[in-house]
Image (cartoon, rainbow, N blue to C red; front, side, top):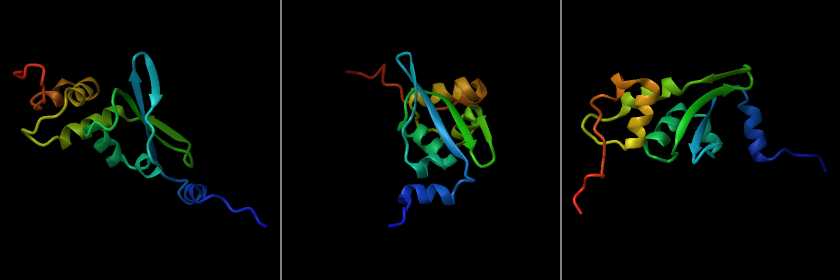
Length: 123
């Protein structure tokens, strides 16, 4: 019986020349890459959406790599700027998202963003 590659391997073989995104997270002194589905790891929009929606926490860096082209880049600043541009005016974002934008895109991008801060909420 001939060997047949798994469906996941067949999918990867057909899409070798695709840019993948890896999200490096930091939690309690330990770094780890966020576990994501293959489809999500191939989508810049999914990276931005996952960070904005809080699907990944403690984001330290975002890397883009394309194995077929032998390239890898730190795209953290680019992702932070894109995230800042996608924040709806007046709609609050989490403090973690604001901190990510400020740390990686700069204060100019974070200034004016509404933050959902519940630390001063009445009991």
